[in-house]
Length: 161
Image 1: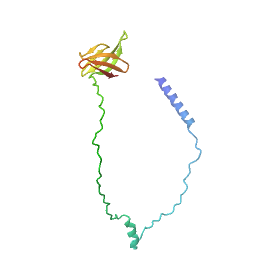
Image 2: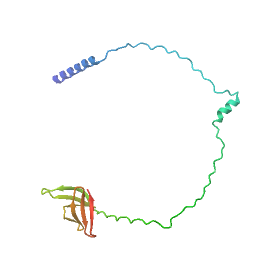
Image 3: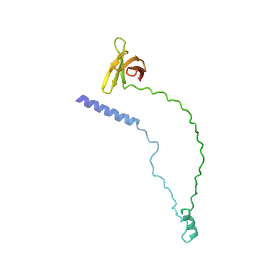
Image 4: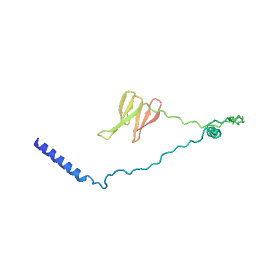
């Protein structure tokens, strides 16, 4: 307890010494401010109420002008229409995406890549050649995509990683 008290007193003394050392000295003394002489402010009326012409001119700028709006009439124009519609190129077929979703991958101790796939509430671990839910066969596992073959409609599909 004595050591703690001694350390506390030494730290306090050191703090006061440092504060006294770092306090800057005053370069100027504080004196009374010099008296400021001000002139009284005078207000002038913009126009006297005796002169009606001046007041009418002043308030006239706030009166809305009575103007008629410009009338605009629409004119009909003949539009030429092409009777021969241009043939459009058929849209490319949209590849269906499998209902599987990629959630991760790993490499086992033998160096075989395995991917984690999910569909609804089910999670599957598959490697190349495995069939998921008796429908999708994993054809290839690459760095940025997984190629899956849909065995029901014989289509190859791609899952992006």
